[in-house]
Image (cartoon, rainbow, N blue to C red):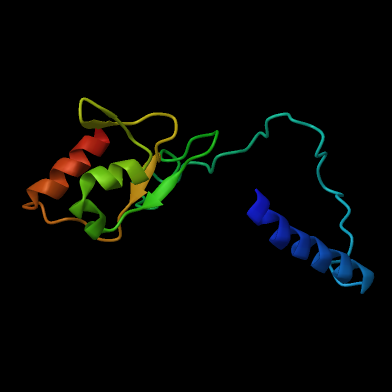
Length: 127
């Protein structure tokens, strides 16, 4: 803590000088939301498109929010690290999804089906 005093004092002095010189942003007044209210927002999911449409994301989204993570093929070179980065927990050495785990992954390139390690990692993420 004693090493933080000098930089913090300098930062506070810079802020005071900026205020004295009239620097800064214009004042902001909230006009749209009641920031004192803590009620849960109600959202509306996008209506389902044609069942055959490749762009129908209605089944991939959750009404309370969805977390999607872009995963590259090179990320599968170290599956345990990938599982950790996606928020998986480990049970008996296997990845286990919980509330903090990414809901879906997006891959711009699909793995070669003969790549056993990547296919195993994908299968474990699906289970």
